[in-house]
Length: 244
Image 1 (cartoon, rainbow, N blue to C red):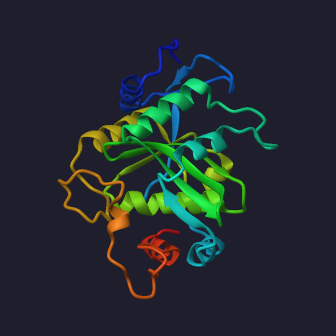
Image 2 (tube, rainbow, N blue to C red):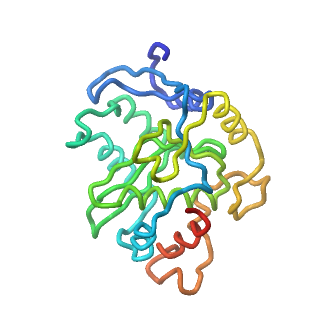
C-alpha cells in the first residue's frame, strides 16, 4: 500500500494498468490507499459457474437487464451499508472519480430491474481487454448473479480476456473466481492491455479493439431473442452454454 494521492481519472487509469486499485477505510474517508494484493481474484471467462437454478432465472428473464443506464444509481447502491456489510470502502472521492471515468467511457455498469425498481447490478472499469470489477450488489435474490452472468457473456463476445475481481470470497468462489499470485496476474494483465489476442467468443477479428457493446449488436436468434430487446436471457444462457 502506498500513500494516498489525489484521485483523478488519469491517476486511476495508470494505477489499474499497473495492477493497483484504490480503496478507502470507510464511506466518509476523505483519502484512499492503494492496494496490490499478493493473491488476486480473477474469473476466467470460460470458467463461470452457471448453476441450473441460475440458468432458469436467466432464461425466464426474471430481471430486466440494462447496461450504463443507471451508473450513478448502481454506484450509490453498492456504496450503501447493509446488514451483512455494515461498512463500505466506496468513499466520496472514489465515487466521484468513477462518475468521471464513466463520463469518459471507461467505467460501466450492468443493472437488474424488477419492473421500474433497481434491484441489483455491478460496476467496473474497462481498459484494453481487461475489465476490473469493482463491486456488485443485490437487493433481490440472484440479481447480482444475473448481472455477473450478463457481464461474462458481454466480455466474451466483446473480445475481452481478463475479468479482475480483486479478491476471492467464498461467494465469488462458487461462481468460478480463482486466485492467482501477483506475478501470474501481472502476465495476464500485460497480455490484456497489450495483446491483440481476443477471447474465444469474440465477434470481431483478433486484431480488432475490444468492444464492450458488441453483445448489443448480435443478430437475433430464433427461439432465444424476443421482440422485447436485441438480447434475451435465453441468449445469455446459450452464450454461457459451455461454462459450468
